[in-house]
Length: 263
Image (cartoon, rainbow, N blue to C red; front, side, top):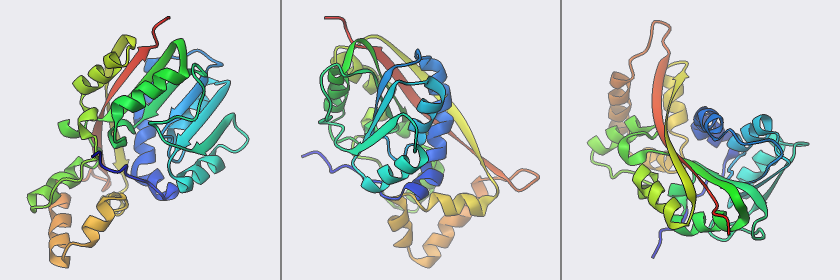
């Protein structure tokens, strides 16, 4: 039986934990897509609207429909994109509430590894996009060490804790993405590896933000104080600050795009 989806229910906390990372990768991703203006977009798994905001600001869309299972995240997205050409509703990536061929493009930003059935989600994106339209995604290369907080995961594993991978972690692999896209009948498939960096004011800032992850937070809170202190010290030793005390972390995402075949 597929694992239940992971929910993110705090838009503000998600903004610091992952929204800013999403936009860093999204910048390169959108330049690579280079879509024309006035397209109609489905933003599948839009979360708190971090990527949606970039889509609206940079691609001059005629329409953007964002969908996500979390009403709390959607409330944040609605506030950040008030009076902009974007609408949001709760829904399931594996059963999109849209008509066939309703959009020019469908995109899934840092979401596909959370979906219990990634192939079904890709098929749904293909269904709602017109022939000749675009279906695309980018995902952290989790199994290749590309997750933004991979160092934290590594140190937790070194202390004997199981990794907190999402339910469909294999979908983060480039070869798996290629298989999903070709299996859905998409053509003109292209891929791109995206590398990004983010700088934090100091270690304490990084540590505070890293612990807000919806799965990391309860795991770290449940650790014994001595074990939690050990984790913090191991991380501090690896995250060497610059002369100003700032620390810089890197991440890597796998991106893919394809075209819906003409009928």
